[in-house]
Length: 162
Ligand code: 4NP
Image (cartoon, rainbow, N blue to C red; front, side):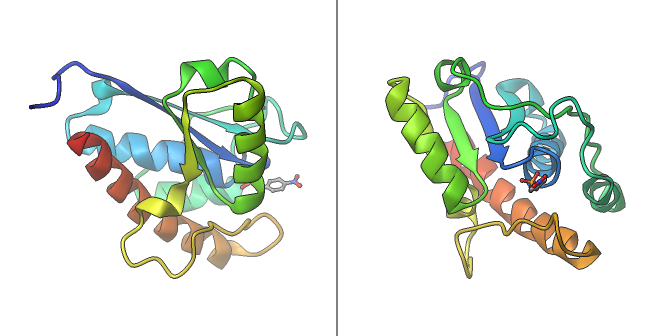
């Protein structure tokens, strides 16, 4: 059966601080969905498991790498909330530490969300984590961008098929 044309999937991308990896994932996924003419099919946000950067714009290095690839980042950092586990169909973690935190919260809130790692969707991946680039240089952000871009391409393809 064909997918229902106006069906929407809601996706929350999650990292630790919500200033480096998950805002980049949010921006890249929206960019790809827009390019495919599917932006109205998805509700996309990002959040962090940590609270240190609440209210901040993404890290300047994430904004720079996104801009270099024609992707705009419009989010402000926030922490995951209990409501997220009801609102979102997919809660997508950048690494195993954050995945474990989200899975524990998902159990606590009796969530029906699919909680998984972003790189699950990357064809030919060499690891299942997007490493935290916060304490490194610009090359870590370019690497994160590439993993995120490949993964979001796979995620979009998957969501078009379900
Ligand atoms: P993110 O990177 O989880 O990809 O946003 C980090 C940002 C900030 C911190 C750690 C990771 N921090 O410790 O402040």
